[in-house]
Length: 308
Image (cartoon, rainbow, N blue to C red; front, side, top):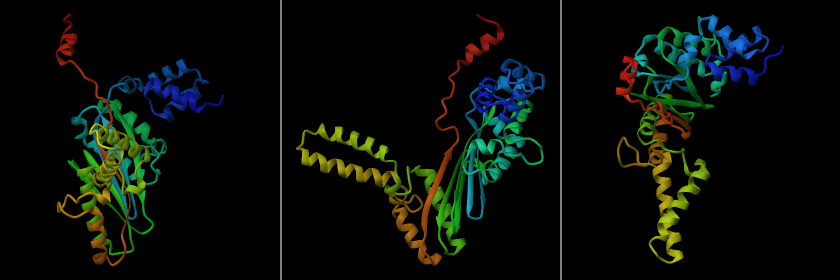
């Protein structure tokens, strides 16, 4: 019988095992979900599945650059100890390189062949879970490319070349001097790591975000008790300040603490010998948005010792 994508998803959600292994298990058991779980268990994947429910909020962010393309990935583990493991670091480096051809699609990246193993990326992670003894997962990926120019990058808290706790890639479109562009790209990436802007410019910021901020500013201004026309001016002033603080080109450059980033880019054009356009950026901070499980260490010790 044909195995459906929904069946594969259900088995993966239930076991934490990679999609290709789940698909094979279902094919071997004619779509019987319970039999497929047993099939996975008999092949030594149960150990990995048991760990799949545990929260993985540590790990590494990996960056890979290939000319005019740049990729960034986040691969999580349960502890920082595993993030310092050479096998784990090797996986992150390989996955980051593969991500250059994954178009920012984490599902596509998960099923790409892992170099030298005969397995997919997801299957390689499952194998590593069984060997290392911690849950791991490929959380997200993104790719930036430019027609002509460079991809600048920066990795903070580096543990190995191209991987650390925070990573940034930024696209600079230009026909100018590549050495100048790369130096500028790294500085802008460092700035982004520090300030975490919402977008490149006011033109590409999410309208819903702006609307939410405007509503908050309006309510705050109304509390002043001033006339409506004064309140309107107050709100517009705060919206302008929001743009200055939240969009990359309008922010004050952290490197010199004085210039606007947009002015720094404009000034660099003379040295590069051509116009420069910041096209996009991606900033990944390890574990952001993951709700970590709060544990009672004393209770865990007592439970382990059999104390009630």
